[in-house]
Length: 219
Image (spheres, rainbow, N blue to C red):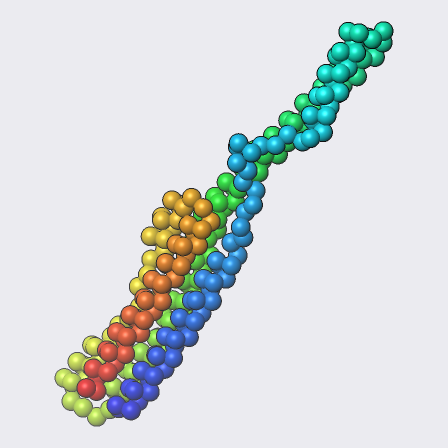
């Protein structure tokens, strides 16, 4: 019985290492999917296209021409056209700047929605795989206890010890709540790195407790 328990514990150790590798890969994929946003434009750096200044200049000269030239109507029309064109170009540049700022904000808000969902899916994959694995190992251990000659009291005691297997104890709620306070993409990446560490630790704890529980059966 001792040898079989040791073999099962070895399988648990291998599963632990495999799940940690998968968890690391899942989170690396999520972090890698966060692309830098270069759309934020500082308000004080809003630029008016050079062509707008040229058109304003032409408009000014046209205004002077309207005063001193005989072709007043032509100069006035040209001046108004240039002034309007310069104004429209400047407005388009400012509108583009505002749109860039809005796009960057939308991108961050989308991440605050999408990232917790991706993390939750990763957690489910890890915990479901662990649960499926441990369900089989529990049956193996229970069969081993039942097939090993011993008195009923001792058998009942051992069965009670392994009645429940250890679970990977980690919650997505804390992460989802914390990520709402993120101000930048770097904040989100930092939170992902921290949460990944917690998941790896939770896998270690579950595996270590389970190995200790099974070892107690033959110690």
